[in-house]
Length: 268
Ligand code: OOG
Ligand code: MG
Image 1 (cartoon, rainbow, N blue to C red):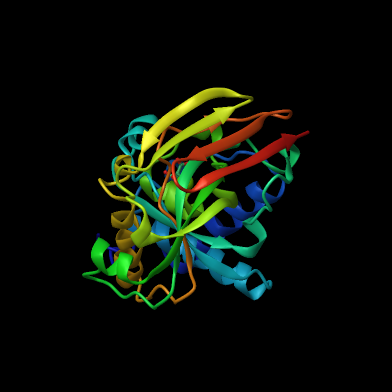
Image 2 (image 1 turned 90 degrees about the vertical axis):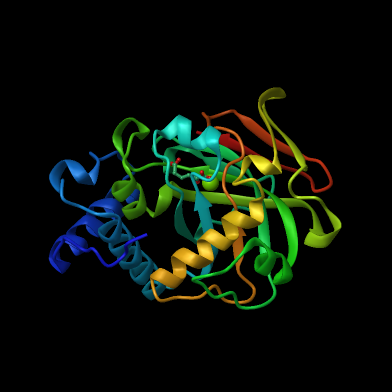
């Protein structure tokens, strides 16, 4: 991935970060950034994302980890983007298990079932492998991610979604933590339920043939940005099924083989 091919001047990066932040705060959808900046590259997308991260850190939000996105075929087909991406996770995005999330704080939220990793040692790219990730993983947990693209119609291209921190909005971690070596993350099954009905089904291998590959991808993209993944990071490995739209009144449960289940609900 070429993260050095920046086309936008710094003042454009700053004003695009303003647009994304404002869309999230109102909350109200905006056009894809490439409509006004057609020359925008992947490197520009990550530059805007880094500017958002810098602003949130300065405002006291803790960076608790990272996420991989667009790591399953189901997600790539749904979104029409076939390159995985990464985004950062903050303390403010964490929701306790069972807590009601207010739909009014989001634009058009969708949920995804994901396997979360917690690391016990620093990981460095650019040649990080799934094996390195497993050696540095403390435990794995069941997770639901709430994504909320800031773009109209939940439609985007790669540079725009990178600038939008990969649609990150909220996440819930729960179930039963397991040592990574105790479970087979390739064959682990999951059932995503919305209001008691099955809304999606998958196995761990849906994510890059093994979810630890997605964590390695995060580490290798971070290396290209000149950064490492610190010990104690939480990493979401990416939606295993396609993302499911949610509305006020919906109750979502992700049931995982070996990892227990995690639930959340949405209110107006
Ligand atoms: C981009 C974020 C994708 C995942 O798990 O694939 C993502 C999007 O689809 O809006 O979080
Ligand atoms: Mg996700």
